[in-house]
Length: 251
Image 1: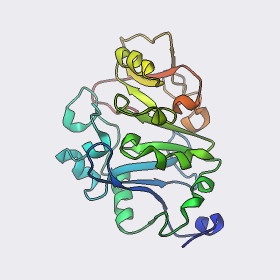
Image 2 (image 1 turned 45 degrees about the vertical axis):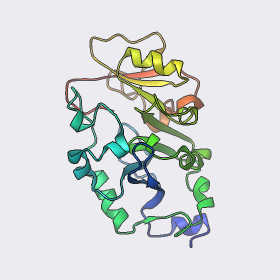
Image 3 (image 1 turned 90 degrees about the horizontal axis):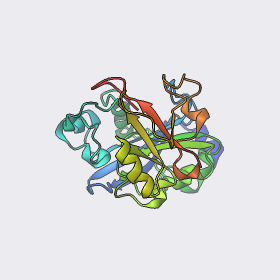
Image 4 (image 1 turned 180 degrees about the vertical axis):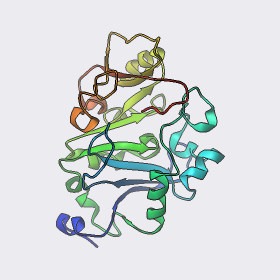
């Protein structure tokens, strides 16, 4: 078992398994995996962030979205393909999520308590920017598994469509994903900050600001540098971004 941070960094693992167990959404088996810990993420909008992938552990993600088994990690998100909404999730599950899924089944991700000492987790993420839920809703994973990652991280982002049922602990880490102004009001009343995707004809609310990493915000920064989508750990208004067309990719 790897017991030092230096040894972990020198290992051949691609990242770590954050959680393996039942989904908080429907009890089905899921896994949460963190990779790009070396800061090599090439996502221009987010910048260099640790990526985390939440998916069924027994069903490949590109199959799960077709059968509806993605509910285990996406819950009632209106962007799920099976919901046939005006907009759909931007994640192409046959690309990065499938690659992560295959690597997981090939034992390329270290398991805490098996391959390395779980006490190393805060040190592994110290000073890094972390993205909770590159795919999947962080709510599906018990929040106690996210907290050690955030403990010494430089900053993080997280978004949840499950804010109506989630507790206040998750609200300290994640933004409530809001689909309209009414969601903003209701989520704020429950103690959540929000991230809203608005239609072009929908006005920005008084307690919102345009996401500075968006096109309409002038792409002034990226998520890693901004750090304002970190739930209630940050005192700030609520970011809003434009939905630039029906059934197009969106954050």
